[in-house]
Image (cartoon, rainbow, N blue to C red; front, side):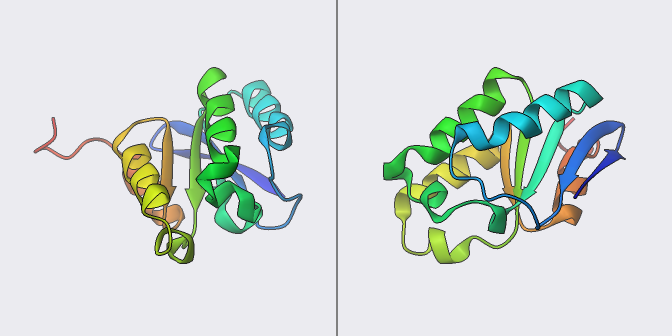
Length: 126
């Protein structure tokens, strides 16, 4: 089940942990289409919804999925603890760090962190 929320004026589709696993770019097209229909700017998906292949960069699944979101100009927030994946993969750790520096794809601990990231910039950043 997904819910539409507005966080700091930004429409976000928050996906539930139940639902089909995401194992490739084709699996996100319905989510992106639904989001675009509703005027959503970001989709937040629990990390457990992603197939293990997403977290192995050599499979190119993460790159393909992220690229779909970029192509359709919808932000992707992966919510949850992915430390078991990043601990064993310096490449994934670097990928996550680079994504989190940008404004298109974020790997965040939880919805509260998403709320903070979507908020207005701190006075020191403005």
